[in-house]
Image (cartoon, rainbow, N blue to C red; front, side, top):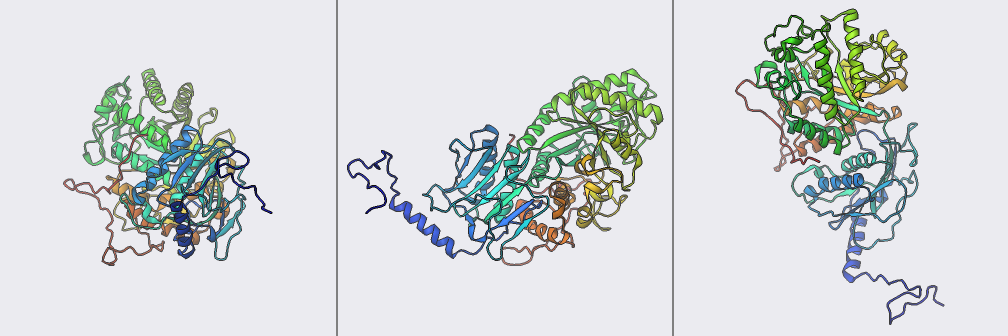
Length: 602
């Protein structure tokens, strides 16, 4: 007796009336060849747990590796933001693989958002993983930490990644979560995926399940464009670096003594006059409103929020050059191209100063869709006591009137609290009673300890760029601290997140920016993203080492820290490569910028 009803030869239909799917001989041959190839293929070159930042939960299954076929398709939920993540995945994979990777819509149904990478040939019948922890085969990596999360508790930025022989599937509650899952998938492919030209490689992803979400909601880096100006293309390149490691905020230090970098319609001389200088006497520069919007849009497409800083009441020499009426003596100071601090300030006793503050902050707020507006507040040495706190309190109210949340360096702590205000702490001593008291009054903190997170500090005494006032910071020092327990009297729940500032008094080129970011930026990203239970220096440095070849292929300049066991990189004739570090350029030297991939403004 047959166990299934026969197919009608006249109609080609099952008795149910459904059409029969008959794969062609060519389809069947491709499936068979692929299956045979997978049986004979070596294991994936990357392990499932070799991700930076470390995921919350990893359950490897070496028997479930997925190999990207040439006819692969990307299917995604019918949501415009999710579709854009899928388009970005295709843009990421196409150059190195040479595959067309069309983006299509997933069938309706299911919860949340999903993105699936699979082949178009008939399914081989291998089921997708449907549990939070796949059973690992011998030799697999399995890590379930005390910070691990269930698949139904991914929050605003978490994701789940399932890899089986049939497909790679990323699921999340938001497009941001999908995007972070794509960054993990990127790291699980061979390093050659960073190539901008086709590579003949086996594009294999290690099998298993990752379930992941961030520890802190604010994870960022700061680029100082005031001491040295960096054009839009360089800023976009930095955004790409942040997104790669799941950092979600770019703080732009837009104004200082040496330069005013953003155009303000109501005070039109600020940018052309105040922006015409920089440290060392270079030409400076500034962003038009269109430039700034382009940066904001590009960042938003990569789920990075721009945090603009207008530094007040000190660090204002460039503004005073353009508008002497703001100076206490109403006399324009000379343009400043040095690196000292604390000598300049706007007049806190003049009502015209507050017209200026309201106009500037109002225009910048209108250009910035994110919730934050940074007012600086540090090193205003000549505005003391009640004059300082009064200025900060009034400026905080001006920010609140724009609808934004105020952020300031931790020197604003003594000022009266306003709702939701955030202090950015950059001290080097973990005992700061004044900041702890501000937290008790309701402030939240972004932690940027100068002796751990300041990326303008030298790696070692012979580092050719950078400073050492906060100490030398190599990778382990950047990695070995706990944001949740770093500041005495501040509970972990008051910590909004972590930010790595890069001041640019001595940093002049894109290559130097990258040299100071890498490899410390991924270390700080792991502190901000990963559960504390995953913190392990030995494991981190081994995972980090695997990123060196990726950076080299991507044209990213980086410091080859002796603390990290970098794999040897070789030339085509199998000779070890030598990578020079950037040096401070003289006035006649050409910029030593690393090559960059073409970018498009989302």
